Image 1: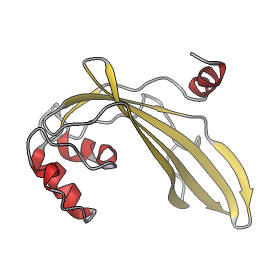
Image 2: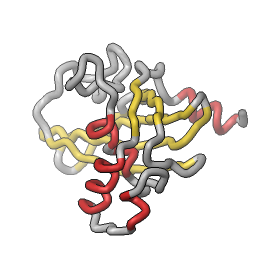
Image 3: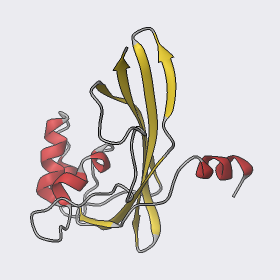
Amino acid sequence: MSDEERAEDDAFGAWGPAVTVRVERSATWAFARAVCDDNPRYAVDGGTVPPTFSFAWLYSCAIASPPGAVPSLMPPGADLFGRGATPHGVFLHGEQRFTFHRPVEVGAVLEGRMRVGEPVEKPSSRGTMVMTRVQTRWTADGEPVVTDEATYILLLAE
């Protein structure tokens, strides 16, 4: 691991609980249509998934326990904005990046874990911005498949 990778790794907290998903064909096809991509490879078993589907498959493909419950990837005790219960403000989704380590096929069973970075406060012309980076790593048989990284922003008016 390089010094840069080590510094990046240190920017995050502990990994949260493992959550398992089965990449379902119907959910993949519904997502593809929602993003206006009608490529038929998304509608067949063994086909690949749309590039940003990993951001949503937790909500449509999770293998829940108990059945019907959507499991949480958040690490125990994680506080997205460092302020306890979510304060009143404007919540924004900032930058997002997807790194595919290999293609994701419809029907794959994956395990995901999330970790949350330390919130960073910055002044803005409208108040205070609190920014937090979140990383979710999806694996199959212990090997990396896709890594999602996102920045979330809370704008607090003053």
